Image (tube, rainbow, N blue to C red; front, side, top):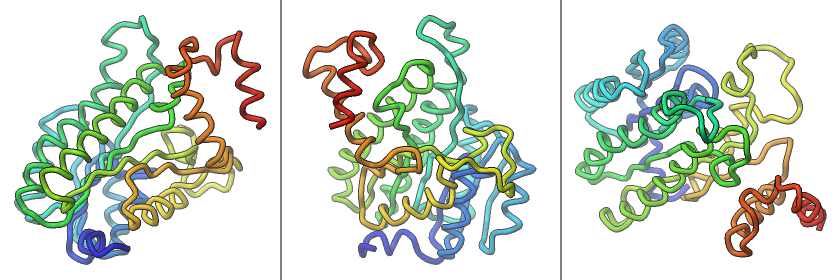
Length: 282
């Protein structure tokens, strides 16, 4: 752990987590509570959030609400800053999947964009100036997705939102470096295939029927914390389905679509699928 990160993840500092009731958000809350951090948590499922809060041995603010409503984030901001008077970590974790294609209606797109992108932008707008003014070591963590980098077909709205999160977080990291000289940082957490209610809507958290391929949320969070302690910006998480090398090669292929002037999404293009398979077997 770097000295700066030691001053972020420590007793009595404050972590704000959106989408905290289940999955990755809940596991992040447990992990940071184990470091004796205070927590400010929001989720649309207040019942599950209450259950989680009762298991956390730390001071906790909980709020129920849909973060796509800016008023919910404003309430979270005011409660956090007035009660705890500190924000060391802002973790924009909340997300949804929404199957909206390139010519589906804007209404079908709106929910995905509002939750997966605009809510993150709203949270940054509220919290980042406060964090900068405090002039204490702090970090903003935004959850991206491999789908926002390789952009596979079939889930356009989600890929667009997560692609925007990648760009937003890169820009945020650069501007924070300039404006705070590294006191405040931003990081992009890119989960692998994970055993969460978003990916497995019918799952039961205590069941033993987890497939082999996904990681548990705990595995992902343990990996994330280790990489965050190293101050990594891109925290690309593996899983049991693909190796880090496979991830790297897929991403390189996607970038080379532009450089080599191949067709859009050539990995799935009928004239290029064979070449992609050969490339992956190298």
